[in-house]
Length: 557
Image: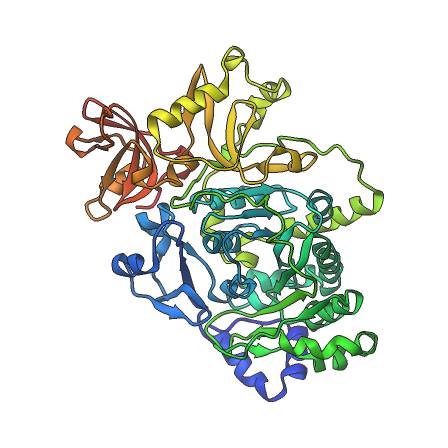
């Protein structure tokens, strides 16, 4: 059934599209396209094609992206829980492809929740370099942190901050910055009719204010010679070409990198700014035509929803080769994921004063973010809704005192090092960060994060409890079998893997526990599904005690 579009929106699009309008309207009679992207942190493209449990067609603009048939539910397979792929709307894969991330770079995903584009960036970094991922709304960072962990990202830091405060801590630090900007969401009307209902509440004018501030701050975060990719899921010229032209006019050290007109991508439309916003066009006339080199993704010209993408290149010389402080984090080959109940409050609290203007700007951005549902703006409903719970209240007193009382006489570093030596075959890179009873490996380190609201300072390794180190689920899922002293493989074909994912205890013969030389079968075991890490178990006398987190257990019939 065709989507009922707001009459004001339809009239405006008819005025802009002219002869294309009828074809555009017919696209709303078609079902939206479903896609997934292979997580190459855990599995190669070739491997996944061999084991894919459903039919797939390549997405032209993303080498790791595939269309899946209508009605197929990739989230109801053990491979999803093993982090082998991310369910993502096809057009939403384009911005990161155009960001052209290379291993070893420093990358910021500024408006990241629920994390689909973050996982795509991480796969391109291949565990080398730095990934800082942020969302200004605290509730949305739960889904963001979950996806960072599920998809095996070892070199990420998760923040809950305003762009301005990040810029204070990371001035001209990043080689690449992605802005998946909050927008009026017109491109998502076909995908979710709720967006049609809420469209009037997300006025273009409000979005423009936020987008302007975010873009200006991104310029302060970017290293000389770096690249910003700005994207929206709306058709409004005010939020697209006009926004880019205004930025270029104020920042002459940036230029638009032209996006090729291929794979169904259409050019930007500077003439629409002249038609709808003549004063803005006159103000930015010297740079406005550059926006023709941006890209519009139209639902009637390709198999995907509506998007806009601009690639902004800084003219300066890159400093990436001069600064040797970029940490080379070992290749992440596993999905590391944590219960939402383990989401932590800022491990170092904000200490600098915030101006009245900054408070007002943050309030506007947080309000808009709260009103937007994750599924509408980031193409990842399934990833953002699993699991509930909060242990912050119960841990408050321990945090106030720094370290928990149960380890007052225990050196967490010694306990942690002992666990690594006895249970892992891995060289850990980065800085070890201790927060309360929790241990992280950080690609950035505590000093640079001081004063920021931090959700994850790095890869969450585990917790020191009662003088023992208890490994986290993120640690398990970010490993491969060769990096664990013990592992056991479960088949996705015979139901054993699903039983594990449901939290059941399994009877496992000792002969099935693969282990390194001179390692006893008893102890923590890396549980794999068809060879890919899914979580921890504890083996003793033929029984595998299930350590899969309750908040993430398989609930489908």
